[in-house]
Amino acid sequence: MNIFSIRLSEASLIFPGFLISALIALAAQFISDHYGAPSMLMALLFGIALNFLSDDKKCKPGIAFSAQTLLRIGIALLGLRISFRMAADLGWPIVFSVVGAVTATILFGLVVSRFFGYGQRFAFLSAGSVAICGASAAMAISAILPIDERTEERLVFTVVGVTILSTFAMIIYPILADALSYNTKLAGIFLGATIHDVAQAVGAGFSKSEATGDIATVVKLIRVSMLAPIILIASILIRRLSKVELGKGKRPPLVPGFVLAFVVLVAMNSLQIIPDIITEISTEISRWALLTAIAAVGMKTALKEVINVGLPAISLLVIETAFICCFMIVVLYWFF
Image (cartoon, rainbow, N blue to C red):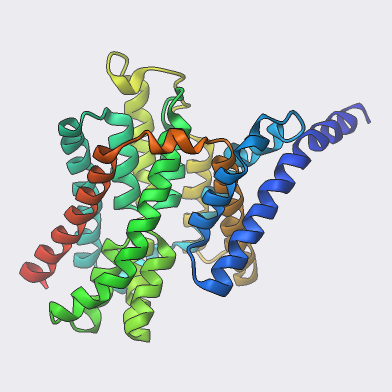
């Protein structure tokens, strides 16, 4: 009874901030459904507009819960969207090309960021979000980086940047695929391997044809599957680095729990031991959890802090986006 009372007390503290975050997520989804705006971007912008609520004593615990715990739950449940058979159906040469594009983009970002005056934290955050799956990757990567006073500022800027760039890519890349005379298969590979966010990659594919959309979806989910190994490797490296920038601040656990959950769910989904209805429900829960989390992150961030990030950071995101696009164009030209 005593434990129950404690839990009930904790829930009552969390509820107001969580409710506000959830309402922002609902509003963002409404705008997305009726006007076609990216739901993640809308949730983030609405959250930033309500930044003053993050200082309210009643709302603060729930906003923090949504931005942290709910975020990890959403990322873990992403594992149910992925299975090993996706790679087998697509063909290993394509899988290796996509893995190569993701890896090369992250390494490129880590190197190029030095010329823009940014450290490895922002470099990994920006390059990882461009290379893997946009806003979702940005939130996952931010969750394992050492925490400092600019953590949320970097995250918000990256989410806004990759979402806007992904939206532009959704419009421009199908036209580029036609200009490059790509057939259905090549167009699907190109769109899935280069557009940041899942929704935009899928939308761009189906804007051309159903077959192109199916291929783009599978390729995109292969990129999403890279999230777990990259975060796992990064977590190990971060713990070992003590004299460089990444080593400053609070160190995360060796293997984050949400990454382990992600891997386990991928394995379970691959073995087909989870009923389809559970997979569908969990996927929807994941989507809403991430949307609510990004709304909370927005509320914790002041707009002036995001604006202060500056032109070099924007340029870095654009260059990383151009790199993965050019990388895949070269790969498709020479090997397919």
